[in-house]
Each structure stands twice: as structure tokens, then as C-alpha cells.
Length: 252
Image 1 (spheres, rainbow, N blue to C red):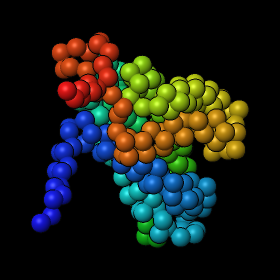
Image 2: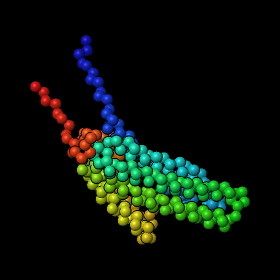
Image 3: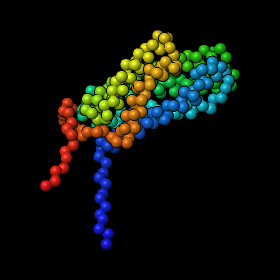
Image 4: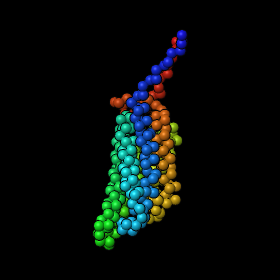
């Protein structure tokens, strides 16, 4: 007779489910955002795109991918809000707001690019060349500004809201939120420099400034997906209490 008994695996609690979902959403933002720039290259960098130059196959795919990027970004905040509001309700609300605003900027950029795609179809129908190129240039400018004010600024605000909670309560290894808090002002400085024309947002200098915030977001996403938060959440009715370490079992 088999004397070994199989121990049932304890069910996943709500906090672990939230951190797992948030981690997957964070990773999703990276997976979906990487190919977008390449797919949009023709429409944003070729002034003759609207006149039928080059392929337009990547535009619709790029739009779809950016929509998924925006939705996964919102998803990170929505699933984490019930957990992190126990530690810092104001910052938790700020995290949701900044993620939503970032997604709104992305959606606005998608609409601008898709509008250029529609104008390209109008050119095939015999529309005026000069008016098409002028309108398309304006729409591409909208896309460029949304890229600066959305993915170029809001990740820093996200880090200031989210990383401060993680650092104060030790929910993840301290080096992760520290990297986010270092990267936030660097990203804001780089975006400000791009705003005033010091360098392009998509440039080697800008990439160096954005690297810490990118590493912070990817690392915290992977950590949440694999391990979750390190400590027990504070009670619902005590947003300021520091969570205590999990109790250990004492055997007689």
C-alpha cells in the first residue's frame, strides 16, 4: 500500500492573482510596443507615403499592436489598484490616472496614423496632392507629440506613483523601485530636452536616458509574474500601517 500522501496545493490568493496578471500585462506592454516603430516607419518618416509611396501593410498592424500596448498598460494599473491602494491610496489612484492618460495618448497617436492611411486611399481616388501632403504632415506631427507626451513622459509619472509604494513597503527587491526612481527624472529630463529640440526622442542619447525606466518596468513585471509581492498586504482599513512579516508556525 502506498504510504505517501499528496499534499493539496493551496489556492492562489487574490493578491497573488493580481500581481501575476499585472506582471503579464507589464511584459505585454514590452512585447507589443517593440515592433510598432518599425511598422510605422513609412508613414511617419516618408512625406510621400500619403501619395502612395511605399507599402502600407504595416500601418494597420502597427495600429492594432499599439492598441494592445495601451490596453495592457491600463490593465497593469487596474489589477494592481485594489492591492496597492491599501499601502498608498493617493499614489495608487495616481498610478491608474497616469496609466490611463498614457493609453489615451497612444490611442490619439493611432488615430492620427490611421487618418493618414485613409488619406492615402483618398489619393488613389484623385484627391488634391497639396492638401493631402499638408494634412498628412499635420497628422504625423500629432503622432510625434503624442509619442513624446505619452510613452515619453507618463512612464516617469507611473514610476513616481508605483515605485515609491514598492520601495517603502519592500514589496519587491529594493533595487527595482530604486532603479525606477532614478530613471523617472532621467526620462523627464530627456523628454524636456526633446521638447526644446536638444535631441530627437528616438535617438541614441534618448535611449540611454530611457534605459533605466525600461529596465525597471521589465524587471518588476517579470518579478510580479514569477514571484508576486514579498510581504503580506496591510489591512483594508489601515492605509498607513506598515505590513508585518508573515507569521511562522511554531511546533510544540
